[in-house]
Length: 393
View 1 (cartoon, helix red, strand yellow):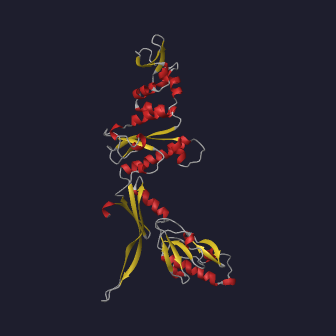
View 2 (cartoon, helix red, strand yellow):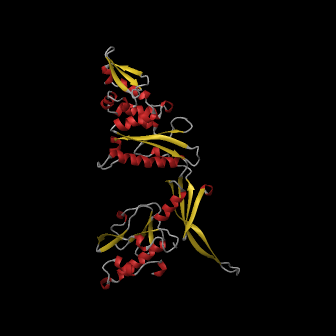
View 3 (cartoon, helix red, strand yellow):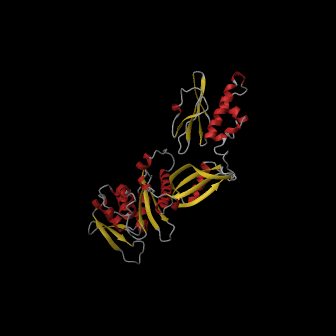
């Protein structure tokens, strides 16, 4: 994996190494807000990784699909036809892309004319429609076929009130790497995401789809990363033949995780450092700090309060401390229910075995004071007897 190493940083006694994720998942396989379609700059048509099956149906063929076709379908299925007809019959043809519907008494048909906003330019008849054809959808099929992509987008945005639509693009590390596409969702899809029905749902949907497009862009250009967090462990090498001792250290893995879609590997380094509260002055006594151990009080059983901690998170363990001060069990994941009914024992959130023992020792000292204890709770005791290392107890 070292061949994939692209960034590394030491912070105190910790080291964060970032690698390219060798098997990133295309975000379109997730439960996204938007249905995403995009073309590559080489004109090769829709990518097979986009949401084309979701847009066109499971029986569709990729070669028959395009962004323009998807936009035409959105217009035919969702646009307010009465508003479009009204715009086409308006006095100024420029209200609908220089097109206008004019009734011809001789043929008893409506003629769809082009170039109507330019009086000195010859008008072209794009089609003739009987009155009933203005209602059955035939004219909208004709319109959708003559409109260009940017015009189709405008029609969807203006006349399809049930559709939230964005245009997006992404550029990779090479100037030749470029994609552009659309994303859309309807009100039903938005509601299924579980958002509160307040404010402008379209604006919320568009904002989410723009964020999703950035994630897709990171996937396209290989900006998906994994990290290793290592802790420096010092040691002294002792030679039996009389040579002087040598001090050294080695790195022990604290945690590792992948699947981070970020603009830069250094963004991930900053994120990991923040999550683990690492600073340039970090040393082995600062992660986690006393306040980060967060002892939580549980219910009382048999007159003895159970002090419990339960937390589900990658890389954070649940330490089950027995009455003898030993770590009896370690759970990667657990719940308070795992500990309820076990008087006198408690769990501590910590990456450090010594901290768990230190908290156990502190609790035993506090508990042994009995009725003479001047503290109202264990938190007060800890605040006046801060824990730094197990050896300090």
